[in-house]
Amino acid sequence: MGDHAAKTALFDAFASVGKALASGKRLELVDLLAQGERSVEALAQAAGLGLTTASNHLQVLKQAGLVATRKHGTKVFYRLAGDDVAALWALLRQVGAAHLAEVERARAAYLGTGDAGTVTEEVTREQLQDRIAADEVILVDVRPGEEYAAGHIPGAISVPLDQLVDRLAELPADGTIVAYCRGAYCVLAHEAVRALTARGRDAARLADGMLEWRLADLPVAAGATAA
Image (cartoon, rainbow, N blue to C red; front, top):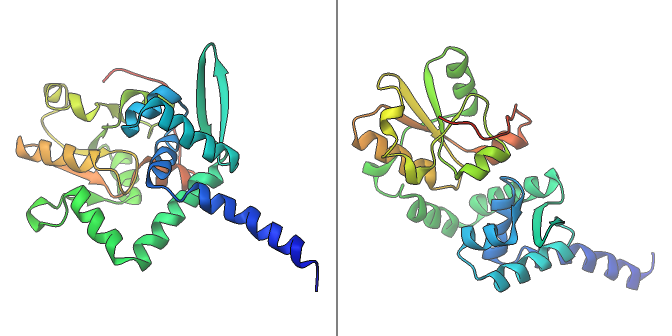
């Protein structure tokens, strides 16, 4: 029958991973780290957290074996401990969306898709690959520049959302612009498409984003390049 105490210890060890993820802010940090390595300071700023609070959340994730660190000078940089952590995050979202009605309500409210008039056109990864091969689209990465540099879809132009309107003249006036960001629950591409269409551009968004692209083992380019 086995040792009951040992079995309990085993299941408690598994539960420590669940406990580490039992915080919306820690999940947000995992989501950010799925885009690439970041310093504590950069993570705190991106997640809207104080430095001490961000550091405490990251320590919980580290104790559960979900993230790893390296030091460079006085700064500490965090990264996911493996692709399996990103896959776990993606699966958690999938299960939540399939079984909790409030996930869909929250998603629609956050992404602005509840009103039919705000729905943005989307393309699948397969459609995007076909259209890139046929040279039919201008692919724009609207994530912050450091995320683009850490890894992006080959051929994508880096135009962070907060620069999009000011840099619109840099994008060809003809052809469809496809915007993408972090993943299926990232608002940046939605806002980019709405801004582009409001200015008369033909625009669509990738249905998911960089997280799903990586997990599908599709080609990823790295390094910052100008538009």
